[in-house]
Amino acid sequence: MNATKEIDKILTKDYLLDIYNNQHLSITQIASLHNLDWCVVQRRFKRYSIPILKGMVIHKGKKVFTLLDKILTKEYLIENYVNKRLSANRIAHLIGCEYSAILRRLQYYNILIRRGEESHTEDTKERRKLSKAGFHHSKKSKEKMSKSRSSADRIHKSETKEKIRRSMTGKNKGIANGSWNGGITSLTSKIRSLPEYREWRTLVFERDVYTCSCCNKKGGNLVAHHKIEFFKIFNDFLKMYPQYNPIDDKEMLRSLSITYSPFWDISNGVTVCKEPCHLKICHGGKFYAGI
Image 1 (cartoon, one colour):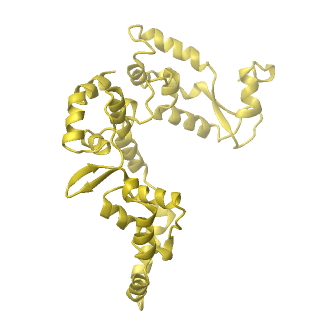
Image 2: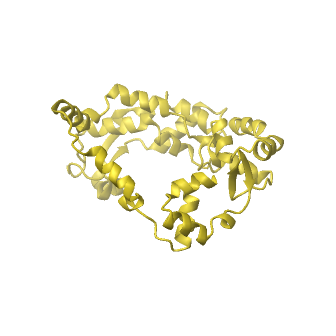
Image 3: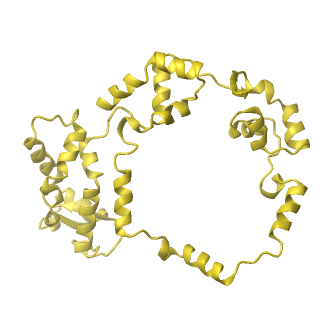
């Protein structure tokens, strides 16, 4: 909620009208300016009923809002793309629109899109051919390339993985994520998505050598089952923090759950295969009552 309020203070209606219509910044540029997802900015445009201008082209440094269809006619594309053999990227650059807009109109007019070598002119093909003629890598260069491409060297060390995980933690979450839908994810799902939960599950699997404790089957679709049910641990956890609401204060409770040891007690976990053993445990099977 706090993040949403902060964004609303910045992305006011007057600010968006000025920066979009007067300064001619696109929605993507506004989002990048404030380190937000473009969907977040677009939702403010819809909320304030600001019309999103489409079909923009750039002429002499200024945006001129006109329909691209008036420029990108079938005759224009045949003349430049087919006859003059200009690339779609080149045409997009000349007009000042997106590359995808050119491709969509080529498909609409049933104009064959050139692929790979077909997209090059004969002069370009000849220059590419001459530039590679007689070129050979030295033995030392070949050894370096072979070493750099080996799978063993591409595997990150555990310290590097941890740095990457920490650098990505918190990014694209909540209101900053384009798929944000009002915070409907349950608190239990948030706790189960924690790195600590994944680590707990892995440690349980490794202790049991990835073998089902019921049928002794190794590997397959395994589940780390809680001997003391997860919902009981979860309810005890909530009782410790009555001042927080599990709906309104999800992020705070999620952070507090990291320090709640019963969630991460390895002795409370046991490895079982998802079907049929885990299903029988969950339905109170007598054969598995000792688990």
